[in-house]
Image (cartoon, rainbow, N blue to C red):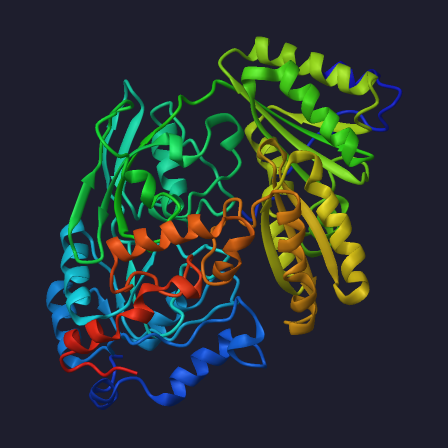
Length: 550
């Protein structure tokens, strides 16, 4: 296989030796509680979300606070009794849970609850439901659409201490664990037992499996193992009123009634709080290869993908791409050297199988064909773990590089594969010099584009140029405005670009059925015109007791 690149007259560089991995790899004052939060803090929170012209400035702006109760001393007493030492009110400790990873959304919650068991979650939600207290479920807080942090003063319910592995069946490969298990920790646990997780994400060191399921995270292995709708076998969920829904099945086949777990996969914590997951895990491959290729055009890249699917077949596990602008940011901000010569487009291909000789031969044949067909202009192959990590870092660390380029507007679009990069090209032409960078990268294998636009600082005028242009463009080609990040706060009112009004109306009915007071992750996922909490002021007054309403 090495000879493919070494003997090519068309490739400028032979396989490069990769010597380095280059991995980055106070309690509240009683007076405030009795009065409710200060008007100043509420105003501050709102300004962080709103544009300069107020609520109508952007569909992504936060709506007005709904009539939920305020936290009182009596509430804190209950939480402290239920969670000894784990009901946090020290502002310094709560701060990080109020702000999202991108530092683009910041809430003003004053209470962080850290349960360890499903029963504790049930007690908390039952109490909050009776008091009409809004709750923000939170996992690893790695979301990109403002779905994992409070918008106002919602109580933060963190699953971080729910991190136990409950069981693992070595025969079937079925793992059952609590929702707060970090994805990377699960991966390490399984690798010791010759299995792997069916999903892999750049945020694996921080994200939690419950959050992954709640957002239906896709990731780098979806091409091979499919989405979480297929690999998740069962869920344990606590509903808004505290009822525990036990659908924690470990059966691969169960055709008795409605498959309720599917409702919660991708629901972003708006229908219930996931507390445990059972998931089907594949065997750890004995042979893994990663190829990093360069192409002159996106059409060549698509033809390479077609060839790849045909010739690599069952061993193909990932097919990712990034453009030259991504490479420039990696070079400039992270000092990552391009492992091959400069090209307009780059491809990361991963194969995984059980026979290294068989896999190597198939990969050799594919590379030889791609070379002689003039589809690729340069490339390198890695079979050792350190070198594999180095090549993968060129794709996985693009998000990190973008954070150093300025304020980032992030979009997660699903399109017919042939349309993916046309959106990037059209966006560059549409924005001109108003943007610092417009980059495209993502999962070619499942038609998922990550389009990112950077500017020196947050720029409402630039945002108005991007949206709704990007959503109108996506809808024109029958795409989805959110392939794997969810809708959260930022995209909730754009849902109609991807879903019909009757479909969204049914979603609203589901929300009203399972969470009639709308206390679970309010202001997220569903558009403002369907928010059930806005129609439950009477419920709030009856349940308010000593809590203040606004």
